[in-house]
Amino acid sequence: ARELMVYSHLLHDVELIDYQPGEMTLYLKAESPSTFLPTLKRVLQSLTQHTWKIHLSTKPGKGSLREQQQAEYQEAVEQALNHPAVQA
Image (cartoon, rainbow, N blue to C red; front, side):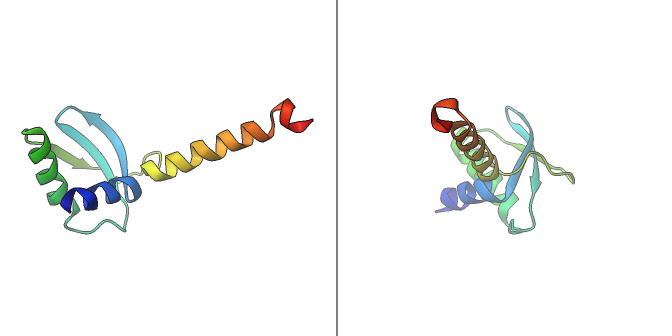
């Protein structure tokens, strides 16, 4: 259950700023619960058997994973609609 909660927040409420093995910098949106970071550290340590350093950024990145997926999808739709075969 913890893993699903972490997954959901990573998908919707977190922006990855920087990543190195065992260390990452995140921007947390207001929707992130105060328990998110300690839970994320525990889940990562449990899954990888390593201690993780997680830093917080005060500046947003390129959007949450979900926002990035939606932007890529929208761009693909626009490219398809503008394709000459579709325009004909």
